[in-house]
Length: 170
Figure 1 (cartoon, helix red, strand yellow):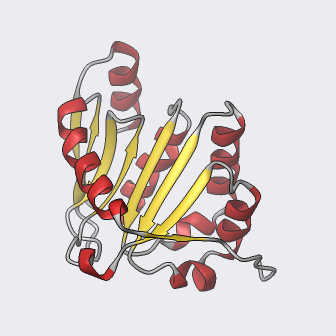
Figure 2 (figure 1 turned 135 degrees about the horizontal axis):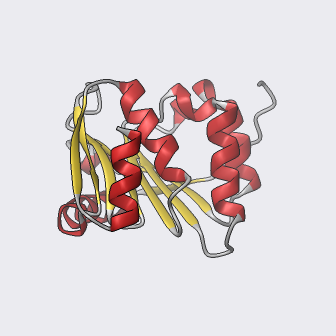
């Protein structure tokens, strides 16, 4: 999968593939964060424990530090799970609060049960249901990305902004 993605990115050609597990979903995220140049948009029920991983935090720190206009926007249904399951990520978000934003969906938007990450408005990985691991990834698919961006902006429209509290347990 990695080699095909690298080639698609270099040649700016569309590529689409299946995701059959959370490991593949996280692997795509970890690869794409090194290739992203401006924005990452994340929508999920709650972020999984891979966000507490030191490698994830390190690559995300490199992404945000590489340019002052780089941004991460996160919308989750349940932000309280982050406090308990991802204390390193919460500390990271507090440190980078000027470029990493967390919002919790309004109760009227709880019916959105999908999960996805959009990179630079043209690449994404998408789980069809937040409680399942199957989905797809797309590279250089601006049209398909627009659909997910529309969903993201819709749930973000009346979301509640969350401020990460300091978490000392690591």
